[in-house]
Image 1 (tube, rainbow, N blue to C red):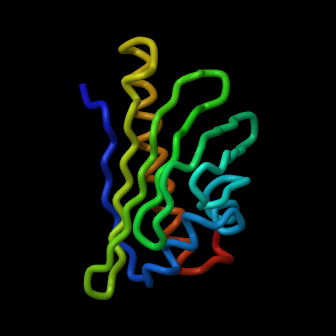
Image 2: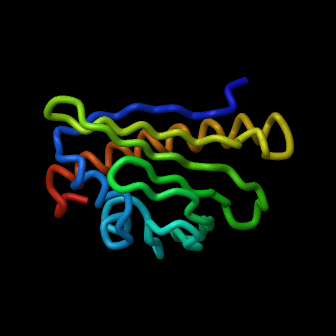
Length: 139
């Protein structure tokens, strides 16, 4: 059973633009989820979408390369970790998303369900990020 989601996405955008999109509350709220967020170590953030609330703490923020935070879906009490790593490669920015700690959920059925939900969610998230970077008004 897979325990860590790892995805790579490529954007034909400047690394600074991608970094700002994943680290600024205003930009995160535009393409991803309503965010009270600061890319500052120790910041307690909140993401809100309809009845879903995600809370956590920023563990690492190294502009423009690494952003790491805990991820707790409110009501579950389960802490996982999301890591964003950016690097420039030619005229592209490569974004690696890693979501670990999913095995912290209480049973195999829930682990499998959360792994699938998170994995699909990150694919959708990466697509929305691409749309936003191409045309911020499109999302």
